[in-house]
Length: 151
Image (cartoon, rainbow, N blue to C red):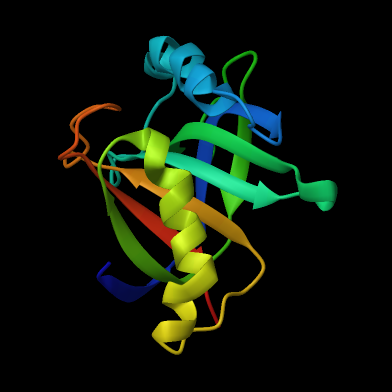
């Protein structure tokens, strides 16, 4: 899997969240609840992507937000939250295929790809970035950029 290194400035995402271990299709269900409501968010004028924002929690659980980037001061619709993604250096890998295999790509990144490329992961926020290259959740040609914080 190819990668590139980038530094992102801090930015804000408004969306809906899930906390748990996602042993089932909880993340997919979250996106199904979020997508019909995305028009309630005034999206950033600079970034027209959608994001999955993921933070590890104690005990093996994680916090996942399905959302859109927003400009400072954007109104948070009822039932949603605003999260600030801090400025960070990332290794960005591109996952190609259905969203059901994204967890496998993250596993490969953390278990071998970072080490193979001499990169050290940093505790922080992982990102899934969905752009115009994302063709749908089941499409084998869909591309999703996976951002892993590094030192």
